[in-house]
Length: 340
Image (tube, rainbow, N blue to C red; front, side):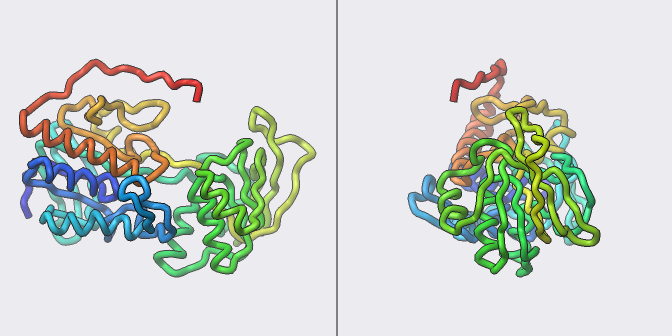
């Protein structure tokens, strides 16, 4: 296996795929894409619902279809890909240490590196729900993989905590698989997902959505048996006297996503306290010259289409960087959000 590349991309989701193709179009010759999963596409292969591609391809696709558009072009451009390869360290001089079953321990030297590791779901521990620790508590994305990839249904009587897109999509999916979704609970006074998902996934299936509600306790021995639900005040604290019990055997958590930045933090790149992603300039270059970041590792995007568009920005920036040996150094500026 070749061990020196112009560009090494860590992550084969929509961001990494878009970077690889755009960099190739911008005359970057030696490109390596590293993906820890068995297949490329990141989360897309398990997202069998439609709604992808409206912004990027101007047509509606499922997640696997969206991913395949990029993967087919990747194969046509003969870009080196290593799946089932885990990156365990990046150094400031752009050396990547990775491991896989076939090649063992790899030391790869790159001229540029793109961080495209995506994000992960927040867990029960992250939101500190009191109670027992029985089986039957799943992150919504994990439950999605069980159903759409592995072929298992996680449970029959379901409560969903959080009205993020994946939570609403999974409420519909569980209903279609024969489960009964008793409620979707949202601690805020509004849905945190897209309006179209609220309409298509909850309203159209008569799934109740309770705003200003949260789970205050989980009960059950071997398996979840019931949850205690309460209304919350403006400080998001449970209001005494509003508690009610809902019997269920499954809880799906859709309580936010966190950029996956362990490698970023370890190499010494500063993270933004708000986005939890690396601080970058307009070319998505981090404080370490030649290391870029894009997609959900930078900040959580609403649509995969937006992730792909940002990947193209980075692909062009990498091409410019290598072509002219241009340094994108600049004084970092804090962006202050407006009223909306």
